[in-house]
Length: 125
Image (spheres, rainbow, N blue to C red):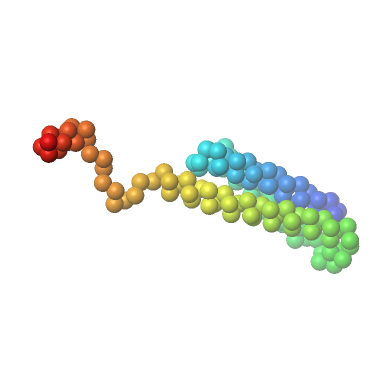
């Protein structure tokens, strides 16, 4: 695989990751709960593929960045990575919000029963 092909393959993977993160974002916005196991497993597999892709990118010599076509491909990938990071940060905030909304405050007293309320009302009237 040539250097440019390696970079292009990395960019295709970045596009896949971006789609996955967008899907997670839509899920968090609509369902307001943590994603299901299938989406998490998909993210893990993409992470494994990303590790392999980064290893391949490390073999690309730094001197090849001077080539305009290679530089354009790298810039395109960097822009996609920034989009992924921004969306991922938003997803973390949505996940935190949904998990805090689901949890009850620790100091909150349980709601009184109907029978107890009827007894209190009967005493005061």
